[in-house]
Length: 319
Ligand SMILES: [Zn+2]
Image 1 (tube, helix red, strand yellow):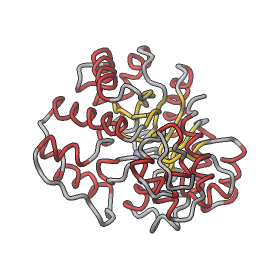
Image 2 (cartoon, rainbow, N blue to C red):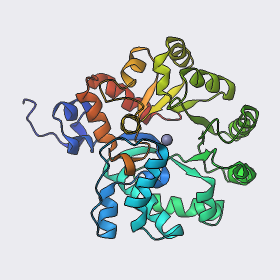
Image 3 (spheres, rainbow, N blue to C red):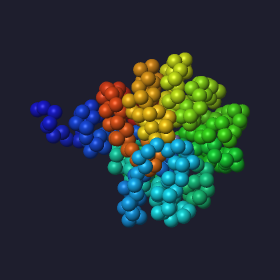
């Protein structure tokens, strides 16, 4: 039997699906998404169907995060009801997408104002778990608490952590909202509650920031971190300390962090022994599924065997 033979689902390997250039086969393979902002993990087609409209995906890179958020508002959110109802549709879409692409390990990040929107931690947890059970029953959810948006959010930290629902904390805007001392206090508290420490670093800024913040905050994983590829010293630090980078290739292309998939820093990071995973960031905006991310990197020259190592790394999240 040659490569053209029909394989049943359990026999399909990542290498087979990549060589066949088959998105439908890739979608059958279990994968992880460890860097996904909860309300932005759905597919455009979900919202087209829901609202009965045509949404044209953005093709050109965004000039700024502000422009990116405007695009979301003007192209998707305008078709959704305000408040909790629209938000819950977005979460439903994220779970539906995880199910459709066989994302079996999913770390979605939620902000404090999302918890408040649903009436506090108790009802938030019940609602989100209910949506997962209904729309992504085969997906293991590892929720991240996203912090860094407004200083008052930390007031809710004790109550949120006491619910023991979150698996990780994800610091966003690492220079914008808190001082290093405040970040250290937050991270110590989160670590004390058994949470994995993650932060958005090394997407913009300096390569040295990745090292500095990873060391000072004792981070377990870094969201993006791709600027580390500019410094052998920083890559050695990450590799020696087994600090995992949850990389989002299309997000980086669409926000002009790099020009294309061939020149994406993931190639250099892997060559230098840095542990990475592949993720979507804001699938709804960047319009690239996890299966598409794997295919794009394969077409850009990554070996199927290296992509398989990355897939396995993601599936063993928090082990
Ligand atoms: Zn992100």
